[in-house]
Amino acid sequence: MRTILSFPRSGSPLLARGLLLVAFALILLPSIHRVAANVAVDPDRLEDPVLEARAQKLMRQIRCLVCQNQSIADSNADLAADLRRIVREQVAAGRTDGEIKAYLTARYGEWVLMRPPFERRTLVLWLGPPMVFLLVLFVLFWRWRNRSRSVTVDEPVADLDEAERAALKRLMTAEGMSGREAPGDRDGGGS
Amino acid sequence: MKRLVYLLPLVGFLLLGWFLWRGLSLDPHAIPSARVGKPVPAFALASLDPTRPALTSGDLATGRPLLVNFFASWCPPCHVEHPLLMKLRDEGIVIIGIAYKDVPADTRHFLRRLGNPFTQVGIDQEGRTAIDFGVSGVPETFVINGRGRIVLHHPGPLTEAAIADEIRPALARAVHKAGVNQKGGE
Image (cartoon, rainbow over all chains, first blue to last red; front, side):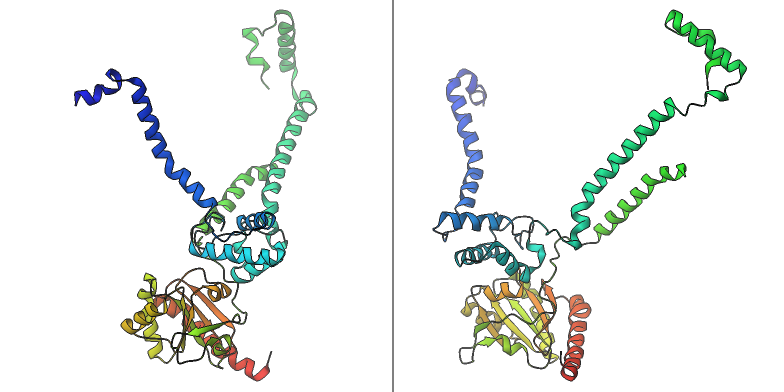
């Protein structure tokens, strides 16, 4: 027990550090492996790199129906693999992106598109957040303008009576002379 | 007037609360069915029974409503819903099976062991017909009216509740629609 515990200190620090590195590498290994597997998951890639890139771009825009929050490019589900094959076939057959998306939405609805289309039905979805943002900006601006205006213009100076005006005058002259108000004048100056 | 402005946050809060409250009862996994109301997609699948001709989309427009059930012997929920399909068959409801990505020998074994509720079974080993139907996994059940149009799409296993609340009303609707369509055409 004692020898194991003291091993990193009494033994070679280099060896201990090396072991730690190996341990970390072992921890990271599965994730590295996973990334590599995701990239090379399909054996039937298109030979033309341009078409393959187009197919992969499309795959990233199509939602997997099994995992739902992954695109079919990311998903390991069986159905996602089938849909990838269909996308590649259609890309190879010269279909446009729009045609391929139409093919899939005819079967699974607009739900399969990761990005909902911009149309009248989705106006609130697309324009809602910017509208709320603009509204908040407008309200903030409006409040700020009102406040500055009420300070400079709307101050009801005329409503002060004689005693208050006198107190105000005393306050202001006192402030002008000493740079701070006299303690005794506090009560009279409130409005 | 100015007082009303102070009510705005409360109104906003209540509105937000209402949406969040509604969101609680929505199923985020529910996939809207795009095929409902459309004719069944064209397909031709080899029959599980080798002595019978291929199962085609024409076989689904028989003049009377029927069910199409996508299933597989490897799918546990299919085993769960199987007794309900048997019950529906015993009532005289026509059910067409489509074996999804299954080895035909396994499908045969599955049906021999648990009983065969299907009047006909097509083999969809590549799963292409399933994709054409908008199937995202087995089991899924469709109600087809007499003219071969999809009336209902039920993803997931059948349950007593689903049969009572969805399948039976859809079958009734399908009968009604078929009758109307036969009289008036489209």
